[in-house]
Length: 165
Image (cartoon, rainbow, N blue to C red):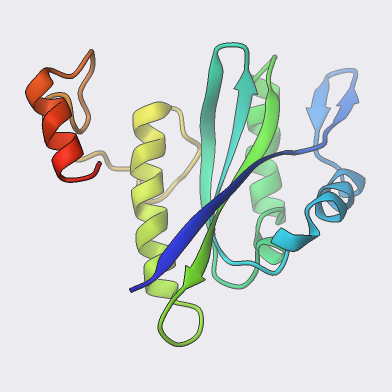
């Protein structure tokens, strides 16, 4: 069975311009200098913002090669730039969900399944998630457990504990 561990959040440096914030090549270099231990890992990652009211995910991705090779590609930077332009306040960050144990080499199937799960969880937290794929929300819910609002009733809380959600 594949296993993952969460690392972060790690602040993403940005360059402030007259019209807003952007992530430039120098910012990417600074990020990897600060977090070089993450560069060769693989798994999933979540780009988001942290502000006074908490944090929210903006984009969920997967890296089957390495995080350094896949987190700041041109298509990802385009999504991050859109998010930076849309988000007036807040510190951009990255969480890494690192593959720690798998049978054989890099378990691409496990990484793909984890990405699907994280996209669904991200959509529950932010309906404006910037992902293009795997974003169709299921048409079912379980009150107080999955895709529901409000305080969960006692039975739902006990059920969550029972099945370790």
